[in-house]
Image: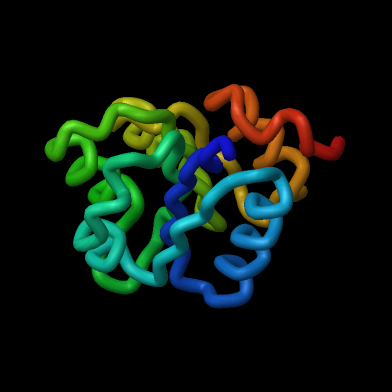
Length: 129
């Protein structure tokens, strides 16, 4: 049996986190979801992920800082930043720190799903437009 590709998700809003977990599980991913960046960084399974999705504003830090810590640990996969507070400055900072894409909340789930499929080549077989 083929192992499901692992996706990391850090989102402090429980409803959004659960919705995205369900979306990506339905698309064939093993979703590791966390309410805080520290929990993600403490999980040894995080290093085996094919993609990282992070909310920008988190309680104790932000998604950019979490990605910086992942990169320091040698993780090199694609990353998507989601935010309800978009700006040109934020997009520039996110891209400069290694995010592949920045999406504004609210977004349509199929847009995030298609973005992850494009970045990883995974989840395409079950993607819905």
